[in-house]
Length: 186
Image (cartoon, rainbow, N blue to C red; front, top):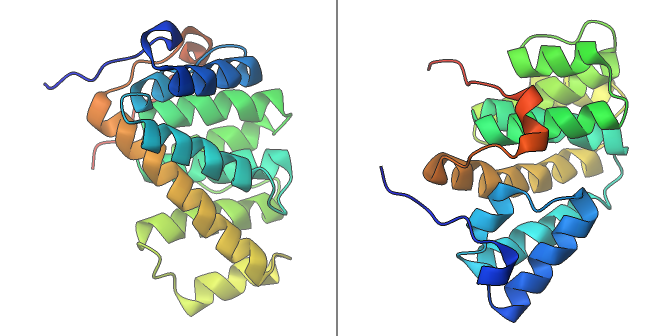
């Protein structure tokens, strides 16, 4: 197995060090996925920029975490499922919604969140070719076309981190270990 470096901030050049330190202030620690991305500064900078843009979308913070969790589960990313499960809990997303999303099953207690989970999952599963029926169901749940495209932004964001984690086999940070997740066999 090819190993990827997990760069600590003091091992990086000044520009990358600053990005990692800012992330550390935001999260309370520097996530290993960002330390791996630091090997390719453009990737790290792009990921952080897209993350900031996604934070400015019309979704609530809890909805954003549900989207990122659903996308990460669909992409089978062990690291990001643990990370977004952890943050979703911190934001007060229900345990039922988190567990259902992690398990790839319907969220039964909140139809709006279920529509969000289902559409985000379909977007990845169908590589963007969602059916008219899936799109109409999402819109009928109270979402709009802007939000359809904001989920495309989230999918791009998750592509960067999920694929990085697949390649690097990024180890979970200590704060994420209680939410560890193993992808189902394909």
